[in-house]
Image 1 (cartoon, rainbow, N blue to C red):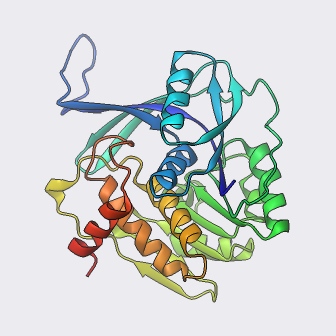
Image 2 (image 1 turned 180 degrees about the vertical axis):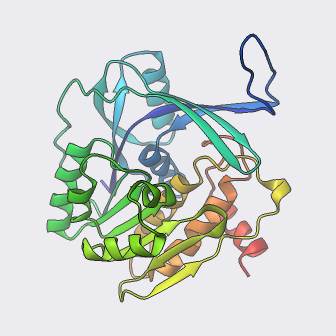
Image 3 (image 1 turned 120 degrees about the vertical axis):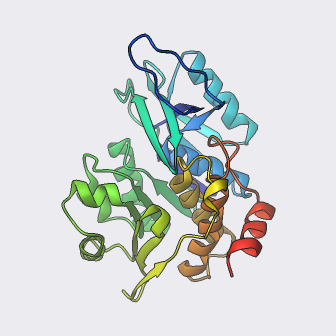
Length: 295
């Protein structure tokens, strides 16, 4: 096992359409994509695409969507350790003008306890806060063993405060700041207070505000992708997380500033493609984005 990711599985149906119909209205989408979804799940696929195939504890139902998800994981060589639920979770994603609306149907009522895994060889743990019991269990073990622990704080979830006490790299969304009534700067101080060695807040088109291991705060601007090339921003943050984990696994001695620059290019690639799978970059894709936009 090179890395372990833990999260909630979705099947994402992404529809590119101008208007959302209401009442008895109908519309025809210009394009669509069907893919795996979920924060840590999408990050795991991004990491695998970049050459470091992780293990994944993910919710899986014994239905046709669950079987489809397992087929997707097999195609990438990802070993899924299922956390069984009764029904698969579904997301309808509607990108529009650089934003995206999402309708979700989620089953997070676990039928069984989380699996107990051997972490031999594991060098990184990435969490999205879902499956809070499993997340806290493995975060404690990894912290004790010196394994890098990473969190995608996309929103306020059950045991976030306790979990952060075992996280090395915490990159959260502005949505979490809003939910906790904190400014991005106050969030950084909160993360420092929880003992996170590296912390940051993603701000979409405004990039990332973050602090390094010394506590120094800096801003990493988003790459200047032309507006007309932006198709689907959904999943960009997940790809960002998966890419910096892959960069860390490739060169753990590098400063996180470089891991984040690598991940920034991966996220920039994602937003120019429809759906999560189409938006997963290769190393060559990231290099091309950096040549074009990362001056």
